[in-house]
Image 1 (cartoon, rainbow, N blue to C red):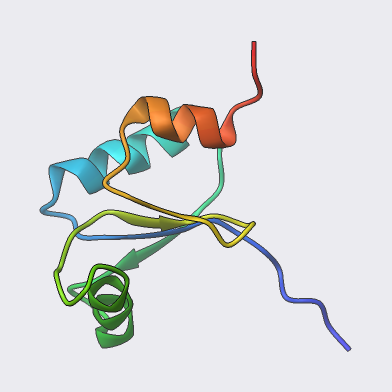
Image 2: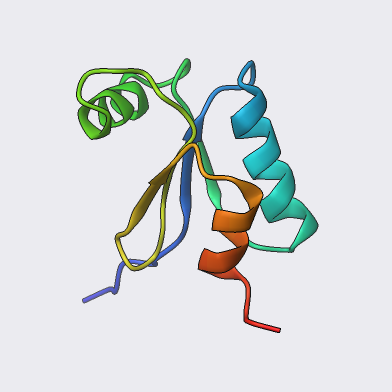
Length: 85
């Protein structure tokens, strides 16, 4: 019996400045994540639309604890994933 690995899922698209900023935040802070491009997989786009009441609002970020942030600021990301000072 294998345990499913928990990881951050980042739904976005390469053309989206907010998605690029979120990726840059994770990369600069050495935080692992899985990139899911909504233009490349129907399942990723469907998840984004379901999460946002039918709208294609990105990035959508799903954290290991199951919580979701949509279009978060860098401060919101830092508050969520970085240890307090």
